[in-house]
Amino acid sequence: MDMFYKILPSVGQRSPGLRYAFVALPSSIVIMGTGDRLNKGRFSVYGEYCSNHEKALRLLMELNKIPEIRTFLLHCMLLGGMKSTDIPLEGHLLSPIQRICKYPLLLKELLKRTPKKHVDYPAVEEALQAMKAVCSNINETKRQMEKLEALEQLQSHIEGWEGTNLTDICTELLLHGNLLKISAGNIQERVFFLFDNLLVYCKRKSRVTGKKSTKRTKSFNGPLYMFRGRINTEVMEVENVEDGTADYHSNNYTVTNGWKIHNTAKNKWFVCMAKNAEDKQKWLDAILREREQRESLKLGMERDAYVMIAKKGEKLYHMMMTKSRHLIKDRRRKLTIVPKCFMGNEFVSWLIESGEISKPDEGVNLGQALLENGIIHHGERTASVLHTILSFFRAFPTSHFFLSPSMVLFFSLVLSLSLSLCLSLALSLILYMFLSISPNLFSLPSLFPYALLFALHGCIC
Image (cartoon, rainbow, N blue to C red):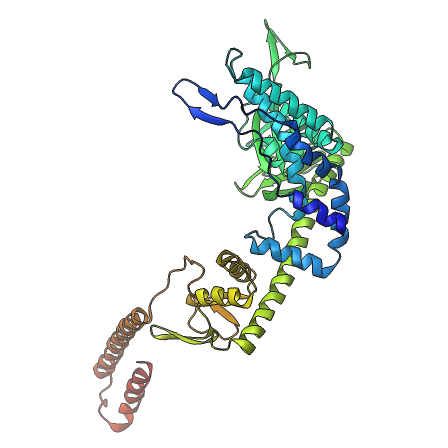
């Protein structure tokens, strides 16, 4: 436990280095403050932090097995404005390591774009070497840095890259290889790369020498691939295809060792085919592992968050009913009475007074979490709240449009008059037809059906 509290304070520390100010000029970018150079001593905290990172993760896994600690961590996360689907604490523990690994990449790119004759070129070069020395002395940092450099190098070999950089959303390459892609009636060979959170497919470039075209070798400089598309695995669905299948998505081509990929964000399908059954199984297993790892973490966070929020809502309700009964009461809004509700601003003030939160922002975040998990809802959504414990009016903005009671009454009257007029015309037409046909219309027995019709009309109106 002592180690846990020893490590956690280092998470929020910010390095004071790299204080370069950029002034945009019409022709170039000038670096100001050349005397403020990188000090390796300022980054010594990263060494201690990174060396204890694995121990911290193991300890956090043990602590997460204790319901009270897991609930406390989720409570802190939600009060801070985060959602249950956001990055968990394990991801934040990794952030400082990823941050220091990106410093050499940043300085390397900065050095590349700085003219050698520029006055700040030596300072940037010195900073780059210093950061490389810092990272190379930390094993965990070295491993993470190697992964990021591999991703950066891979992206540099892809011509026409679109979207967010790999190093910003991915941490490692899970699988890559050549597959046949069937889409829009075409069969094309593409190189697929499966990362955590992303699937990328490219066209392999060829080097043209005279009239011959040869495959690019590793020794040849420049891009190796041409970017063709990417799919976030969060919106990707995979469907197995039996051998011998020929359908709409394969453009009636017979599929062997294949599977379908559906981009739900764009509602686009395409079929992939591997060289053999073994390669197909490798791809399906890798996709399944990536999905299971992502969804298990997400579902676990959502489940724990819902349980914690439900308990928190129940606790607050009992506190309000026993100590602050004046907060929850029937309230009138124009011509509508909403039972058992309270104002959002009163709720936030009460949370601060009772010591549940320390500042208003935490109250808004807590209310939003209660709202998203279905514990409470906005009072404007319905005029009759029969099965709700709590309701908000003002604390949280809503985009729902609703009609005021006076407008509802007006439209109801117009609709009633219209229906009454239509029924009157219909009954008058029926009466006229009977007057034309029946000779004994004014006898007492014959008037009974008409009296019944008019009585029915009056009831409807």
